[in-house]
Image 1: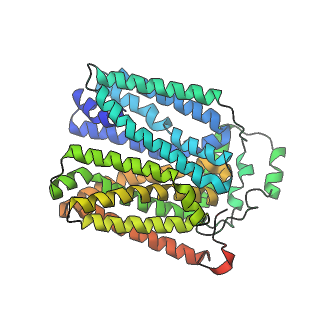
Image 2: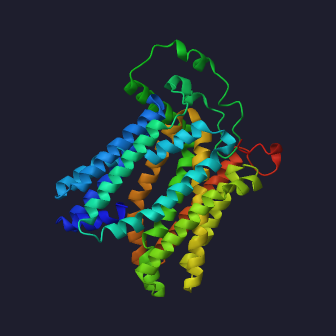
Image 3: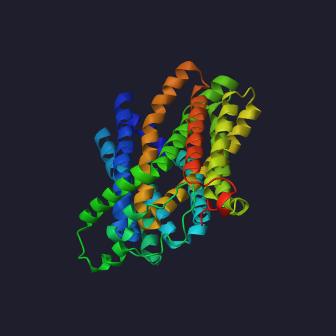
Amino acid sequence: MVVPLLSLHVKSLGASPTVAGIVGSSYGILQLFSSTLVGCWSDVVGKRSSLLVCILFSALGYLILGASTSVFLFALARVPVGIFKHTLSISRALLSDLVAEKERPLVIGQFNAASSVGFILGPMVGGYLTELDGGFYLTAFICFSVFILNAGLVWLFPWCEVKLSSAEKGLPARKDSAPWGRTDGHGQGAATPRQSTASARPARPPWLEVASTLRDMKGLVFSEMWDLFAVRLLMAVAVMLYYSNFVLALEERFGVRPRAAGYLISYSGALGALAGLALRPLLRLYQHDGRAILMHSSALTCLLLVLHATARSVAVAVLCSSLLAVSTAVGRTCITDLQLAAGGARASGAVIGMGQSVTAVGRIIAPLLSGLAQEVSPCGPPSLGAVLALVAIFLMSLNRARYGGGGGGGGGSDKLK
């Protein structure tokens, strides 16, 4: 409801374009550094407690935003939101803890579908309310109220979760993880000697647990999961490049008005939501081979970016946009599931938080690359995105050979359980 209105509101408060850009960038910078920290913290203190804190601080940010009558208050309101608005990430981590590994891609896909519905309805509601007298402040207060309602639901809904120390997570011990290959069924369930003695160790302060988890995650990421995060970054930047000048390119190339382009974006968002709900038959078709689904969805994304960049008619552009919504929704779900499988569900918050930090880096890089590409042609951003997607596919192919997760060998050993 609020995000599409932020740039208009900060300009109405008298901010120059430069100041508005700095204030807008501050949110992404805070998210970049806070995603991994909050994720690790949620693993230490528990998902329910951390989710409640994040929801309440986010609500505070939108309450301040609803009372902002100056640029200073507007910037101040973005601070708690930038640091603590990781509710979707923690919710995904919580879901990964509550469901079986085989069902995880399906459940995360359904969760992403529900989120997509919110991103479709939110701008429509916010756009309607902002036309009322004092509409922005009303919208911000309603958003604050929704966060408070969410906090109440988290508090009331019961679930069982186990808080584990960093020693119990056993992150450095996961030398057998294979992001493009198999995750053994006993990998997460078998207790290592280090884990069996964890309960005998004295409890440490939460900040020491977070620091220990960050050290473990650093070793795991740079030794075993670097390729997963590299693929995530490349594909994220590729898709962001496509959307960066989507409205402008349609207007320059085909004369499509921004209003019609907005309808097309909402239509694509609806298709993305449906794709999340249709993951069950896709997983059954691929026999839960998450690596293969990610490879094929990335290849489809690359092809569609090329077709969109070379499209000569509006019909082809609309078709590409429709299929891209599906391929990117499936790809996001698969890359999240593969990260959790490689990093271990016991550190789900840290793994997902680090993935969000990687995406935040993409949000910083993509506008710069998009501006440079648009200097060449309106088709430049999607063309560059296709090149980056091709690099990601090549990287996945290399890891497929490295982990021996190829086609028919090994009796389907590359299938995720």
